Image (tube, rainbow, N blue to C red):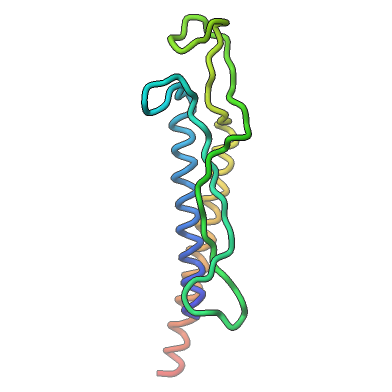
Length: 137
């Protein structure tokens, strides 16, 4: 039963990473230059999740989750015609990040629900452990 808590904890960590990444994407939705001050739009970050072993091996073969943050280099930046913008090119177009705020909000809601599901799993597991000790004790 304690392995279940390890699995749920890995899920909580993965969803927190996802929410942090989404927050960073939304915060940089209009960023048109990089850290060095050069004109280059922010590139959207994505969280990739894969199975990972956590703690002792489970007799059921269940696994937790591990997450990594990667940069989306495939999607092209958005272009907007804004000739007065200081970062506009010779044609008056500004390159903005490849971030859709609606998509990011939907992803945030999904991550929030997954986080809640992991918390609920932990609470049910805790109740099962307490009931087992009550019966044995």
